[in-house]
Amino acid sequence: MFQSTSFQPTHCLVSRTRQVAVQLITTPQGAELLTETEWQQGLRAAFLMHPKRGFFCHGVQVIGFRLEPMVSDQATTSLAVAHANFSGNFSGNSPNTSIEAFEAC
Image (cartoon, rainbow, N blue to C red; front, side, top):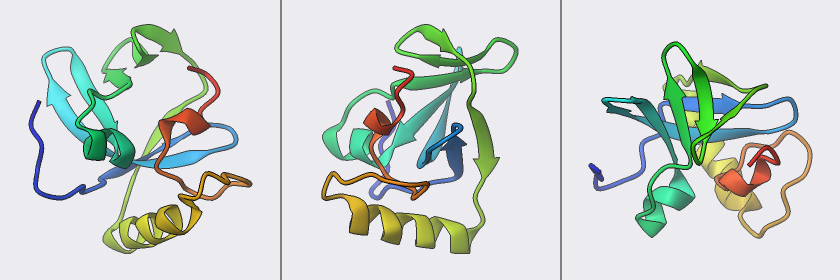
């Protein structure tokens, strides 16, 4: 898996109650949705987006997620809020970098 020198989010993975900044990495199966936490720890992305079959988390199809493109100001704001919330207190609709915020997995 390709790992750049810094985490560069391109999209937000959005569920009904949460959103997380992700970096899309194209693969033959679709696109891996890498979070900052996964990037920092050198882990493989938990989420995969298949172009026709939808979203998968650890190989299991999940529903209720959508992907929204980020503009550069949004990416900066999202990362600043994520770092402020990184203490483990994920409440409300604040963006965060932990894929664990999604209860679907």
